[in-house]
Every structure is written in structure tokens, then in C-alpha cells.
Length: 115
Length: 113
Image (cartoon, rainbow over all chains, first blue to last red; front, side, top):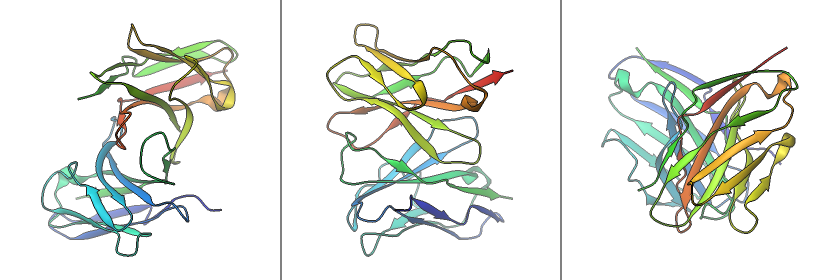
């Protein structure tokens, strides 16, 4: 089947605006992860969902960031009052179950640029 | 807490030459280890992973890595590289009880003809 898909692939917004980034995981995968990759760095963990609930949101940088997965499949990462420092590639990954012995499959990412 | 160090930000190499990309990690608990590759404008793809057993792990595209617990290293090797191996390579670690991947800052492999 299809891999993890993310939309949009690119998003340009102005400082202070609200953005939503979407992730469609591989069908049947119960675990979903969001990571953020800043320029020249490796991905950094943001949040992990097991089913519909956020099992760990310890990586979210502040309360402007929020993510949902209402039906246990598609997830949306929401960023309020965007700042220039939020500019990065936002990666989504999914795995069959939780636990890193399961391979995490990554999407191509959404490149966010805040002007 | 775990951390991963990839000391080489860029490794230039000629086509058909061998290559080694270095990865060192720190952790106070048992870990799983991973190498991912990121081609331009594509998502991260798993090359190989060490979970347990043999310390020499073979992955896709002719890559292999060796887990060295005493040196806390997980270096990636390929005996003969191709132009198509040009990409960014990320080493990652995870606690065995966890779900988070902790990534290094990446090494850009540049294969020249």
C-alpha cells in the first residue's frame, strides 16, 4: 500500500498566523509520531499517538503547538501564532504498534517557512 | 537521557571507494540503534537496525553496521559506494522500552565520479 503522506509539502505563512499540517499514516498503523527537523539538524521528537490519544507530548516546544488524531488514523499538527523560529521541516512517521523495535516509516515532510 | 554524536558533517568519497560513517551514542540503559538515509526531497528511509543478537547488521543497498557496546559506537560501512548513495545519513538511538527515536545531526555523504 501507500506510504505515509503529508500535506501540504510546502507552507509559507506570515508571523502570527495559524497553520495546520496533515499526516496520513500507513493504513492499519496504530502508532503515529511527529518530529521536527531544523536546518542542518536531525529530527527531534514532538509527540506520539497510540490510537486516538496523545501518549507523550513532551517534545512539543510550547503551548502554541497542538496535535490531534480524532479517529486514530489521520493526524493534524496545529501551530498557533507562528514565529520565525517555527520554520523547519515537520515529519510524520507511523508504525504498526508502539515500541521502537517496530520500524517507523516516515513521510516526506512538510516544509514550513514563517516570514 | 540518550544522545547521538555524528562527528562528520560531510564525507566526500570517490565512486567505488569504501566508506565509513561514524556514530557514537551515550545511554545509561540498553538501546536499539538505527541508521536512516534521507535522499534529496524524500522522507527518511530505514537502512538497518540493531535490536539484539549478532553485532554485525546488514541492511539495504549493501550497507552494514557494527554495534560495539564497549565503545558505544554503531558505525555504518559500505565496501564500494555508488553515485546514487549521495544522501544524508542519520544515526538514531532508542531506549528498549521507548518509542522515541533520538537522532544525530546527520552526515552528508557526497560520492564523486
